[in-house]
Length: 338
Ligand code: UD1
Image 1 (cartoon, rainbow, N blue to C red):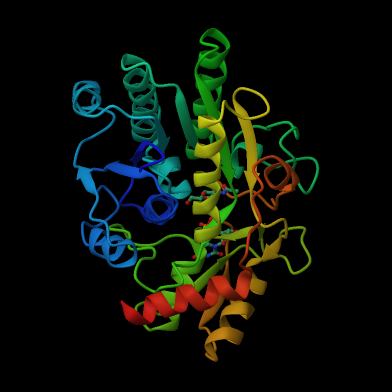
Image 2 (cartoon, protein in one colour):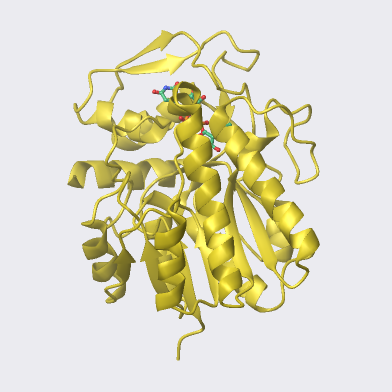
């Protein structure tokens, strides 16, 4: 018997598809809603080949209130995980309105949909970018959020605020906000991974694309930051570890909610790595030397951010299993397969 029917918005996307697999493997029924803005329908084959389940995806724009309301007329959900959003920091600087319109309307429409059927469980994809250039490292959930460095980051701060205000008014609505650090890597089966429709802009896929010759070279964005080698520091978390945290969050919501409402959790491995250290990890795992150059800073980047993840470990019982070399090994296997 299914543990519950979960709506995964952005279910064909990178983190979404890995989470769909984890939910199915843990006994949930899953329905996806994704308009393939930055994903491909072929991911369904990968999900099916890992789990034996062919999930249904509704190809709708969640920023469209009418289409979203219709989805909630067709299905009764026990909860939702809201991934669907635009996520490129640099692009958000160029197209702020598109980011606000898409990322905020879709969230509000999903909340409305859940309320319309008396459902009360929502997991929201937030981001470590809400911390901005934090005063303390590692950041804990109570580290104050600073000025957002990009419109993308601001949509995540605003999404969190919408849920704070909404839950304050509707005490029976339970939300968990997950602040992702830098998701990377691919499913260990090699059957799903990052397969964006748009050209990759995140570090790890750019590295593997350069490694296999799809791109000429990688530019390291900034070598004059105040860090141990001058490049930015991030916390890279394996996408399958991240996916499993969502299953644990859904289970916590279905058991009555987190330790506060909304409950907030950092999802990182708890270790900061520089861009150059990540490149080294790739070179070690692949045995290849990467063609890269040091270049100017990228607008919207923060200098350094990594997580204190002890709250997620304590309360959700979340223990990441993979490290940066596993990330590189699985990302590289996925790239070679593609
Ligand atoms: C940001 C957000 C993260 C979000 C992600 C979504 C922050 C702190 N984090 O990640 O929450 O999930 O966007 O896309 O804002 N880099 C290069 N060369 C490249 C690509 C990247 O040097 O070609 C560097 C970047 O400058 C950065 C690091 O690699 O220092 C990671 O970049 P990226 O993978 O794009 O993720 P973030 O921007 O950190």
